[in-house]
Amino acid sequence: MADRSLLLIPGPTLVPESVLQAMAQHPIGHRSGEFSTLMAEVTAGLQWLHQTTNDVLILTASGTGAMEAGIINFLSPGDRVLCGCNGKFGERWAELCQAFQLQVETITAPWGQPLNPDDFAEKLQADTDKTIKAVIITHSETSTGVINDLATINRHVKAHGQALIMVDAVTSLGATPVPVDDWGLDVVASGSQKGYMIPPGLGFVAVSERAWQAYATAKLPKFYFDLGQYRRDAAKHTTPFTPPVNLFFALRRSLELMQKEGLEQIFARHDRSARMVRAAVAAWNLPLLGAAASASPAVTAVAPTTVDAEKVRSLLKKQFGIAVAGGQDHLKGKIFRIGHLGFAGEREMLTVIAALETVLHQLGQPLTPGSGVGAALQVLETTL
Ligand SMILES: *Cc1c(COP(=O)(O)O)cnc(C)c1O
Image (cartoon, rainbow, N blue to C red; front, side):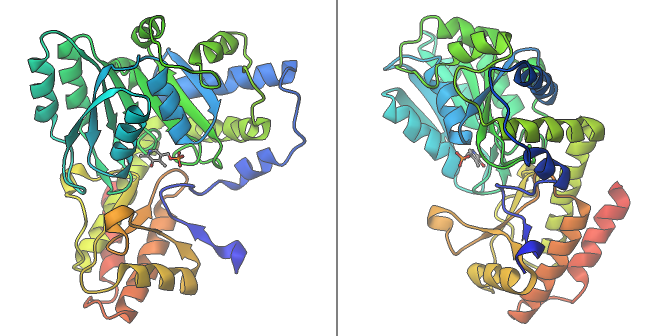
């Protein structure tokens, strides 16, 4: 039954009922006073979520567009950048930088492992001429369920003193602390269909004062994504081009829900969900792709060896109407990924864990029925 489906992929994520209802209205004119009020409200909410007083600009784009905008506005052709690559998204940013003729050096780690901050320190310390213009990393690597140690890598960037730190926070923002001002993050990109609990279509970029200084001399071509225009217009509570106004209605409602819940509570909920899933997977004797120490709060990647990952996914969908994600690139068919980002919480985790347990048992995974649910309940009892 279509209406009974439960979307637990790492984006698009579940949308709360009241957010859906907020969207079901006639559009308003984007040059109206009503829209200006809305723009001011959501901008304040976004600053709260990013823990910043910097600009947080809103683009009509998916997360990739927000990231592209964040990179091309502050750099010039031939600029040397370090890109962290330990999964699909890290690799995407290296490709994007190459497309814009930047001089890209990648710092890699195997898929499923976190980037090693020492590798960044080494390159940054060796750069006495200060030729590195930016360090670009994916905070939560959605393709593998691994979170990178942004705080430590950022400290190395700050010790360098010149390079900007640019972060794909698409599945970390709203799931784990990303204190933009405290850490001095220069560019932070995200997208609406992840932690924001609204449908796809909006991209967000937080920009520091230091990044704006770089903007003044940056020479990469840009037009639709020229963030200078967005900044000037945002100061007047408007946007340079027609925004998807109904998504702004949704955003206002979702930010309101988030503020009601509170940042600490939101982060605790994501941590709890991740731990419930990992405890269940351990109880079923299934391997996880990433180590517990670098577990993403947004998504968990399971790498079964005794059952077929794609069969797990299709049975879960067929019997329970629950969608989980598969693997990307060389991990296709090898893993399945459970999204626990945004609106998902204890109720959804208990549901997916019980359903998975049933499916795994049917497929012949040696497990004790009830063991996964029991392990998850234990996490729940000790963390609620
Ligand atoms: C989803 C996601 C993106 C954005 O992808 P789009 O399809 O462009 O929205 C970027 N980075 C990460 C880590 C993601 O999970």
